[in-house]
Image (cartoon, rainbow, N blue to C red; front, side, top):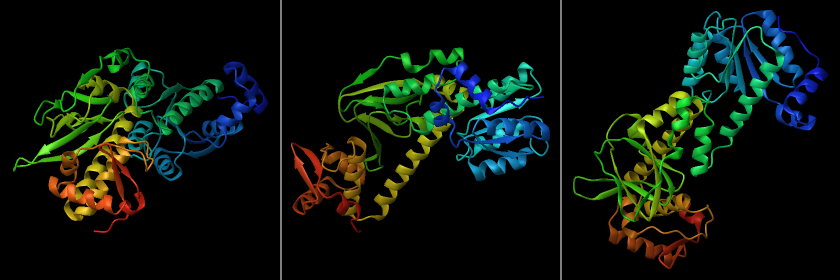
Length: 381
């Protein structure tokens, strides 16, 4: 039976084990919500009481079905779940939460009376973050919770969009041998301006991580015209969708300036996402954002006026290639802007001149400066 310790004893033991101050303990644990799914009533009540003594807010469920419903409703910071339960077992709970984007990132700790290695492997392969065998020590559970919550906060606040961020992302995975051989040590490749990175129809063997520079992705229409499907800068990935779907590249990619990239081979990418649920969810969100941006751009091309398309194109490039300040200059060629918004080069030139006359933009040393961001945002069709 799991023994209950006093609040004072817990703090004393926690500080001794981790070398932290009392204030930092309060700061970290304040208002963290844990969902405990356990069918054994005594175990459930004892564990919940112990977690409440540690200043967690605890919600409980006596079976897997109720646990899944509570996770969706309460959005806890962490889930602790028994494996052998009625209605739904722990593996089913983990599977269902992992399928839902709103709950997929929640850290997940298994509790079980079994300690066979195969059970451990099965849970970890499915994406569990940790695995404790009953009976467990209080500090063992609390230390596991602390580790998972800190890792969760790291993902919640985001990852820096640079090479250091990519390194952090990979090194945050479980300490498995194959993860030590990943792409962080791959050589950065340098491309000159207007150099092809890959061509439509090439085998999708790599995800491209842009370390420095700019890349455009585009398709050629049946009339031979170029339609830009995206512009990408430092910290972004391209080729992800094609690699995930195991298809050839459905568009081409060319540098817009001198660019440095890191090519992540297919097998390295699969090793990352199969070995760590957080990484898989990170790329799911990345794919979702990319698809949303592409859909918005296609709707703009299909239904908006020329002026609104040019305005939206300028704002999109500004968002990609500046820190977000409206007066910060950026460069995009007339040809690339025309390909991006789907209009003729001559029409782009006329529209940009109109915008200059209306004091919406200015052009200095071939770079564009947005002078009235609000009017561009709210331009009518």
